[in-house]
Length: 114
Image 1: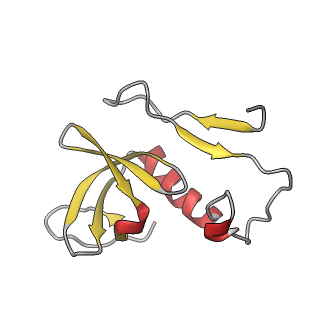
Image 2 (image 1 turned 45 degrees about the vertical axis):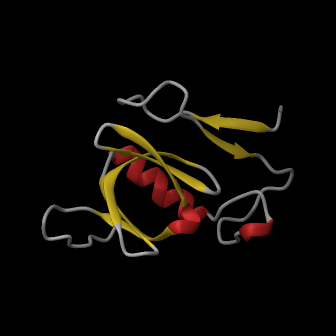
């Protein structure tokens, strides 16, 4: 467990139990290389995107593969899932069920570059 680290998510309305667990590898991975699904690390692009949204407490719309969507704030993530705060509830969303995520800007549903 000495190679594991926990990334604390800023305290909001969530319970104290929510944490993001990231595995530390023996070899540093270059920022432009992703180990993909076979590795123990998500891509740096994905990590940076989620970290940015979490730090800004941005309101996002998560659109699922079936076309339905949910609006909320990303409170944590790991390799396979995203913790989303929506309507006062913590929702665990599996990344494999997500089509895309974008900033929610109100009724216009306009997408904004991050």
